[in-house]
Length: 52
Image (cartoon, rainbow, N blue to C red; front, side, top):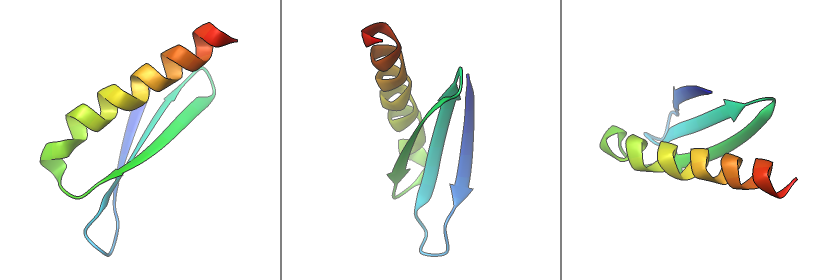
């Protein structure tokens, strides 16, 4: 599983989590919000994988 962070010009942080060619994107307003968003995206990928 990989996590990529991209700082956007507006100050927003884009969080991209990928596992087994499945990726989820999320955005947060500050770096201190990255860990909970990353956990949320990982859970979404796991739920999607289990449902398939």
